[in-house]
Image (tube, rainbow over all chains, first blue to last red):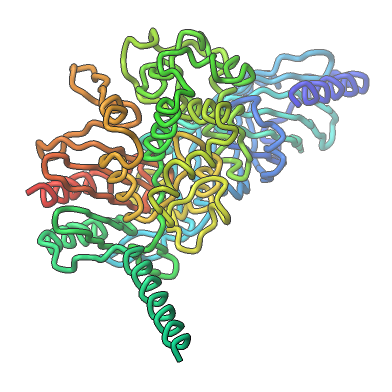
Length: 196
Length: 383
C-alpha cells in the first residue's frame, strides 16, 4: 500500500512538472486551503488502507514567512469521522518548508502544534449524586504534535490559481489516558490551496 | 395390580432422583452468612464510587454465599445478578496451567523440555531463542518472551478494528524478532504471551486444547456455567455482563461491550473464559481439593517464582498473594471492560470470586477507591 501511495505521488509530480509554470514571485498570502481528510488510529505508515474508511474535511490558510512560497506558517481546522475511535475536531498550526523539486512541483516537510478534541464513539455515562446519567459523546481535548510530508504543484497565474497537494500527517496525541499517555494517529490529506 | 404398584414405585423413585439431581446441581445459598452485611455494604460503596456492577461468590465453612450490586447493563438499568456471566480474563491462565499439568501427569509433556519439542515451527520461529525456553519457564513467567498485547501496533489495530479476527500466529508476529527481555529462567516477569504459547502447545499435543480443557476441567467438575472457545453460542450469552471502560481516565464510562467480547473471544490460553461467580469458585475448590490434579502435582504448581524483593509471587499458573496478612492462592484478571479476583485463603479455608464490569487495564480514578474497598472485603472475609 505504501508503495502504491508513493507511486501515485511520484506520478503526480511527473504530471505537474510537465505542465509547470515558473513564477515564484506570484505567491500570494492567505489562500484558502481546502482538504479531504482520511483518519486512522495507527502508527505512521501502518494500516494506511484503513485511513480511507474514516473521512473528514479541513479548512485552513497560510502566510509566507519570507515572502516566498518555500517557508509558510499554516493554520488549519479539521473534522473527521471515525466510527470506532470517535470523531475528532483538530485545530493546528504548522511551519512548512517547501523545497521545489522541479519547476512548480514542490515537496513539503511540516511540523507544529495543535489541539485535538476527540469525541467518544458511543454514549458514555457518569454518576451524578449516585445516579448514572448519560454523558453523551462528550470526549476530551488533547495537545497534539503534528508532523507531515506533502507533495504538490504550484499552479501560478495572475488570477485565482490552485496549488493541489497530497499530504501524510502523523499526529502525536498526548494525554489520551493515564495508562497510554501518548497515542499515534494519522491523516491522509488531499486538497488544494486556492490563491485569490 | 402388582405391576401397577411397581410402576407407581418406579415413578416415585424416578421423581425423587430428578429432585435430588436438581437440588444438588444448584448450590444452596446460606442467607445467614455472618459477613453478609459487611460485604454487601462494601459492594454498595463500590457501586456508589463509580463501578457499574459487581458480583461475588464466597465459599467458607458457612457454606455458599452470593451477592451482587449495581448494574450488569447501565443502558437499561438491568440489575447485576449472581447468575450473570463474568469475564475471568487472566484467571483463564490457571485453567490453562491445569491442562498442561494434566498432560504432565499423563506423561505427554516434560516440563523441563524446551518448548520447541512441542510447539510447531510455524509458531516458534517468531520467538527469539525459543530452544532455550522450557515449558516450566512459560508456566512460571520466567521465559523473558516479550509481551504481545502491549505492542503499540497491536493496540492501535485492536482499537481501530475491533472486528479484526486476529489469529494466534498474528499475535506472535507482533513479537517476531524481538529479543528476550532477560535470560530465560533468571527472573520473573508476567507475560500473556507465555500462556498463548502454552495453549498452542496443548493444541499440538491433544489436537484441540479447548476440548481437552472441557474434558479435563469443566465436565468433571460439572461447571455448567463456564464457557470457552468451542462451546455452543460462545461468546454471545444473554447473561454475560455488558462491559465499560474509562477511555480517558476521567471517571466517565463508555460501553466497551463489543470491543471486550470480540477481543476476549479470540484469546486462547491467557484469557477467554467466562463463568458465573459460583462456577469460578467451584473451579478453584476443585483444584485445591485435588479433584483436578494429584496432590503432588498441586504441590508442583506451588513452586513459587520470586519477585524482585525475593518474595514468592507466582507458581505454575497460580498467583501467590497476601491480603490482610493472609496468604491466598488463585489468580486475578483484568481486561478492557472487566476485572476480577479468584482466591483461596488457605489458613481460613475461604474461597471467593469478585468480578466487576469495569475495565481494569486502563487507569481510572475509580480504581483508587476500588482498591480501598477491596481491602475492606478481604478484611471481612478473613476476620
